[in-house]
Amino acid sequence: MDRKKLRQFLEEKARVLRWDIIKMTGEAGSGHPGGSLSAADIVAVLYFYHMRHRPDNPKWPDRDRFVLSKGHACPVLYAALAECGYFPREILWTLRKFNSILQGHPDMRKVPGVEISSGSLGLGLAAANGMALAGKMDGKDYRVYVMIGDGESQEGVVWEASMFAAHYKLDNLVAILDNNGLQIDGPVSQVMEIQPVVDKWRAFGWRVLEIDGHEVLDIADTLVEADKTRGQPTMIVAHTIKGKGVSFMENVVDFHGKAPTKEQMEEALKELSKQGPGAS
Amino acid sequence: MEKKATRQAYGEALLELGERYPNVVVLDADLAKSTTSIKFAKAFPERFVECGVAEQSMMGTAAGLATAGKICYTGSFAIFATQRALEMVRNVIAYSNLNVKFCPTHAGITVGADGSSHQTVEDIALMRAIPNMRVVVPADYFEAKAAIKAVAEIEGPVFIRLGRLPVPLIFDEHYEFKLGRAVKLKEGKDVTIFAIGLMVGESLEAATTLAEEGIETEVIDVSTLKPLDTEVILGSAAKTHAVVTAEEHSIIGGLGSAIAECLSENLPTPMRRVGIKDRFGLSGAPEELLKHYGLTSEDIVREAKDLLQRD
Image (cartoon, rainbow over all chains, first blue to last red):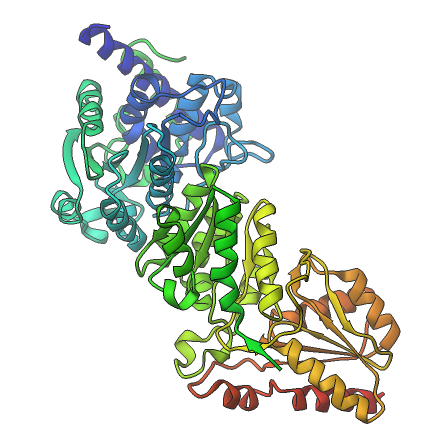
């Protein structure tokens, strides 16, 4: 696929995810749209281009793994899994409802394609370490991708796990920081500053790459580059915008953990539809 | 009577497990010498994961390894495994029923000189309350070894509580551990002592003392606290109508609570709980501490007699 077509393809997929995120959280009346929208382009590139996986065989031992450590952003993960065919798309509209497989935070025993149950912040990187280490022990060439939030990086276990990954030279592991700058109580810089994150991860023994987390080709190229790293894990610091794609949600703290109202949902879906082909 | 610490069983059982199961992986948090997992580390270095002083990271790593088909055994001191890392154990491992066996050592107050920060008196209560978690407290070295080996065949999380203090050998190498089975060690008709861990040995001693006074005591090792062997427990209580529980743990949430819950719903029975009475630990020699906290055979005898006289 030439790069222009690839770009169109991935942007369209990201639009599908965004459309579904809005629809899911709007229908649910709760959820976390902001951090789901900021991660949509990265998740789209991983699931529709970069990762080796088989939706018809979710437990295929050689699959690449994606761990959503910032589990509250599960609408983006659920949307990607549905679009890949792990489960029927109609199920998306049951998000957060009684008896739905789509719990408020991801459940590996309920949803095909979810690699680890998450939601309590900080636990994903350590779990991803275990998956990467198992791959090394078993001589397998699968790769492990884990997405961490910037607010989540305030959890101490993230740094315990970062030391571990470097110590064990887990070069089959790539972490992606969704650096959208906002958390529930406000800007990360005001709640509890985590910068300079690039220096921090470098000091912890990681190779660090920086990208615009909404440029799909940039994301795709950087993932390829990250896979070339040898002898250390890679952190991709992705600069993103919370609420990206819906003008009235962008950079609005409230949409971290608040769903759009029905009116806001219709408005957002209309806006997304105008941006180009995608879901409807 | 020959004595051996239950923690000694850990390293030795792991060696056998390592031979038998290529997918057994052992993790420790800078305590491999103390927990005795160092034995496995030396024999199977490629399957031993040193996590450093980072119990939370260790539990997360174990969860990830388990998703890839590994049977994980994690070591640490019981207080750090069950409390520092509690939420990882609950949210990542137990919630998803992942195959991780927690076999922390140095449980209870008999850690001794290290004092309260290293003495856990509430670990059983915490582990019992977590859905999917199975809870085992072996009485001696042989039961510990058998249990550690047996749970490799059981899918999902299991907590096996091990100690540092050498305690009397009650079983032998032929003992077969079965999860969920309480073991009747002595028959009696006047009073039942339900005990776990090192208090099983104390209970047997108490039974001998009580026999001298004409009190026939039944002693039951409730090595699996969850799932509880309600059949054996109710059967014994129905016979003796008098129950004493004995544990090196808080009387809140441990064996005493488990037995009380079982009896009060099915067969209300007069009972007494020997255990730590809602207090923290203290530095001292293990024997001094057992005496100080009322965890000796004499304490069990006193409670049993008191209970019987009251009736």
